[in-house]
Image (cartoon, rainbow, N blue to C red; front, side):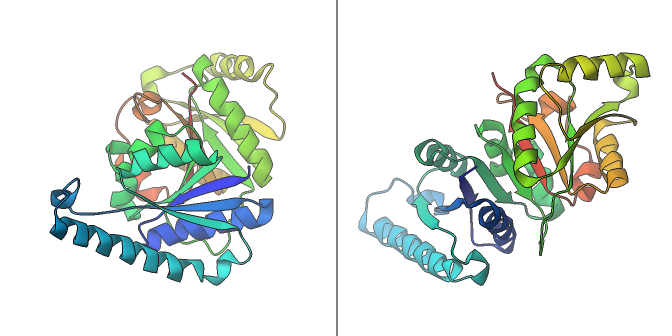
Length: 275
């Protein structure tokens, strides 16, 4: 992992993500790419008259000034930081940057409970999660120091999740975390302990699951199971697979409940399934 992309709107939440990215970059000698997509009013996008051009220049100058202030932050230290201004929808700008700069990880901020809810139901962040080719780490709160010792990776242990598990393993190795692979057993798809164990063991066979554990947790919903298990393990990070076309609904078979939205205060990292 050498290149981290941090989209920013210069908000407090975006800076929370930048602080985490800086911590990772410092530990692993990474470069940071800061990306701001211009939030210009829709009525002046694509308009070529003088008034619209003046407003466009204003937004560009404002972004440049914000970048200058941000780059002076002490926590960035000697990190090699690059900044860029995008002119399309944020998720399109991000995907272009991922390809052009060979980005390994995206770190994004989330705006509280409502913002975290938007992560799963169609906001810009959800679109990034759904379309990004690289892992997306979503930061919800300010972390003075993010030490990831226990990493819960929730999956349905399907064959199409194997690639995302390998990517999760790579991330866990980089940050030095122990992985807890989790199958949430719900009434809707109940499996006996024997069947669930067989499913998990067959899933990891041949992949290698060093420094990891296999876990079954019974709950009324996947969301509650993830939260409760992560709390039991005192985990610092939760991870899951996503599907490029269906977003997180492919994994959760429905929308995310208010429990996950309101109580998942820890960072969440997503790994796109390979199509």
